[in-house]
Length: 116
Image 1 (cartoon, rainbow, N blue to C red):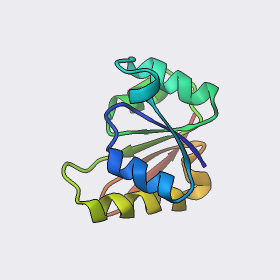
Image 2: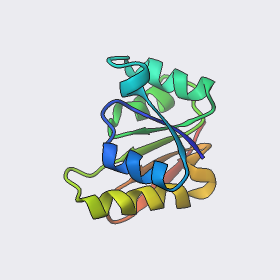
Image 3: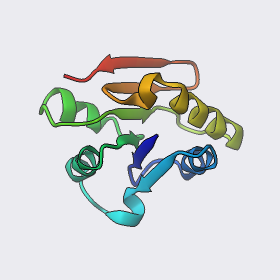
């Protein structure tokens, strides 16, 4: 379970993933201010699924054909601490933890689209 959290990704979800034993690298710590293309490339190079709240990653993958191990896009405006723990559990429950797919999660469900 290896993930690369985009700089904008909710730290409470990261903390819940770490508490569950997942490995999570953070763009905020490793590459603050890096453009989305660099974040996606770093995740791909390290064989990590990118975690983000930025829907621009869909365009990078499906319109620009950028390589990726997988992306999990969380689409929730405001979440509670309890929601963060639940979202982390749902990320871990995804098929292969989101590898090979562009997954969009919200509080009601998810959509999974295979990577090109």
